[in-house]
Image (cartoon, rainbow, N blue to C red; front, top):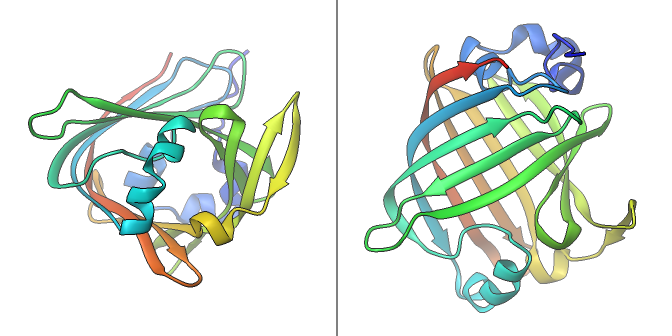
Length: 204
């Protein structure tokens, strides 16, 4: 049976009712359903020499986007699953002169305000959600590797750096987002960000 409460309502806790309308639409997906929320936007993707060097590893893990560019059209489908409470991403990047590139991942709440975003090979990024000063912030809580259903902490910060992200409402249907990976020695190694418009909230 579909739970009418959004997947992220307990993650945001008492802050849920304070979220701007566009954020409640963005996170409208319910668990154990076929809900789909679609957003469209334009992004910039930038990588440092370190990120380019690690690109083969990141591609193998199904993480991030293998190209760079400005004014890149992007469509994102946020999907629910009938058999879980996961929040699934399907990001389609349309780089000029290249076939559409899909970056897929799935977020799973793990208690309190924390989630783990899983990519390929069972590699996950653990983050804490907060809403303060009008912004949704994802704070780095470590990397994990899920194998045979068990999450093992992975000390990847010295290799990849720490992730962080923010989202900010611009109006009732539009938001701005940015994601950065910052290395403790080399500074910013990867970032992408842009402005998105919610085009559909579909319940199923």
